[in-house]
Image 1 (cartoon, rainbow, N blue to C red):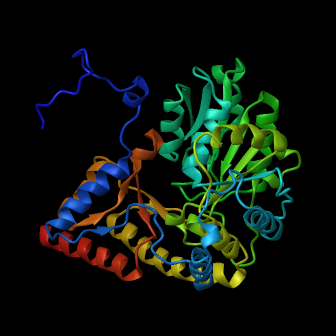
Image 2 (image 1 turned 90 degrees about the vertical axis):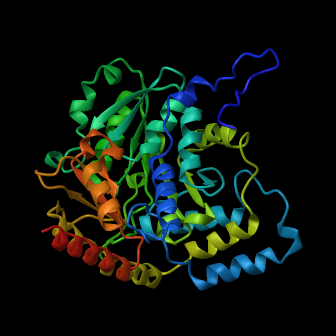
Image 3 (image 1 turned 120 degrees about the vertical axis):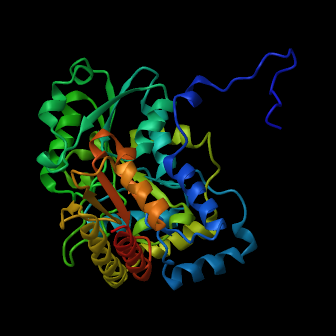
Length: 407
């Protein structure tokens, strides 16, 4: 098969679109395939890489799904804008926890996961050649989707010296900003991968920056409940007065309600922005499975006890992850939030990739090298909390025993 050439009827080679050559296979797609092959050989890799929650949703959420799936009326196509029950539930969730009022009729659009939203927003606002501001370090999909849209990628640096927050004054001096070529800025707080929490000052500055330069600010906000101190209110950029005029916020049930595989998310903004994005979305999908949407609405009704129980699990795992960082000689900020622990590697380490590969091949522990998130992540690694506390402690023992054997 390796010698077979794909060609069209005239015998000329068939080539993919140029945009396919502009993006690489997602790092985790490639690396997890390698991990799977190693596991197939019996190597028993402990994966601390991807942020895929390993815990189930609440029992009542699963019960709702099962009951609704038995109803023969629930198996037809569903509205592109989701069912009213789900939009109402999202609106209630934002009112109750974020203190933000959203009109469920025209300010909320359910999504089949946040990745879908990144593509839809990009297609709705960005023309070929337009510039897009993406964080470095940041979620790689912001960059790859922008490349698929033939946009100019303008990276803005996040550094520990600036608290991993944007320097809006410096960004105002960028040529693409001054010339009015930037259409969208991707923001992600609480931040992945650094775990930097949001604050009101950051969001106010982001809204002002967007309004001043005519740039749509998109805050990707799936981590605001994870490791949030008890009694503290999660933050939304839409709580800033006037934010709806220029901002979009995405949110997801993947992390906050252990529903990653269910693919339920949303975006919220003003009705005009929602309408533009809906034009794209309605030409790509045909709505979500009604029982999934009903179950998601049930999940959104969860009380504080649900989040407290979830965070108790992640808090214990976080302590175990910190011990791994300490064993590796990595430094980290204890104020981090979210599903990961981000640590700076020792100066004597060659690179984050070298360290990650040594852990994988030498100790059978998979962690994420920070370089995949951008140049500013090169000297960092990321440990996922989506592994049992037992597995985290087993990983620590593997690393310790391996170090002792090498001495």
